[in-house]
Image 1 (cartoon, rainbow, N blue to C red):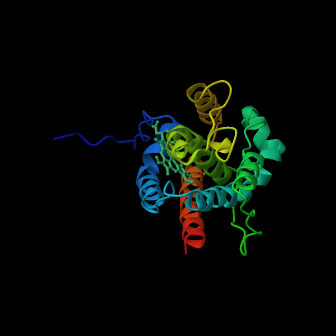
Image 2: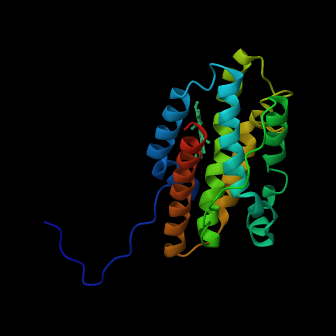
Length: 201
Ligand code: HEM
């Protein structure tokens, strides 16, 4: 039987990095989003795929301002140059589909820490982009037409992601902010679901 320690011991440090914790914490919502989106037959026609691109537009528009935030740019220097909203706009133009109008209710992105969680989701989605890009080829779409925003970054998907994750992991946060980052990521996935349901209604 363990002998009670007179002074409460602090929680052991998590073996996972912040990015790994985010991945573990959002595994379920990510799976639900993947299954829902693929279940909607987005590769059955260009029209269906365009709806998915409009979902992407809505999500990326939600966080548009974060890519110009000086505080976030200091914490995540590689944020500069990562924004894919203009590529999504060009994809919609290729597909001859209008850009969605402004959202009726803009999301509350929360504190700076929550915003890190939102950015984790939006930047992490580029990892799945490679898979989606291959599938989009069935529709004659590629990185120069209709599926530009799914194209891997010039430095490669893995290296680009590792850099973002390293920057994210290096930010010093207090435990309540750590919780806020996870909450921000969950909120972002909930927002994706909201956009999917709005677009495929
Ligand atoms: C807007 C919708 C989506 C969002 C926001 C999203 C978000 C994410 C995030 C945050 C990650 C990074 C996970 C990590 O930390 O390693 C990721 C990875 C990934 N996603 Fe998605 N995703 C979306 C749609 C999809 C869809 C439809 C697929 C279907 C194939 C998909 C497949 C993948 C794959 C294969 C990875 C890489 C997993 C790995 O290498 O560990 N995603 N996505």
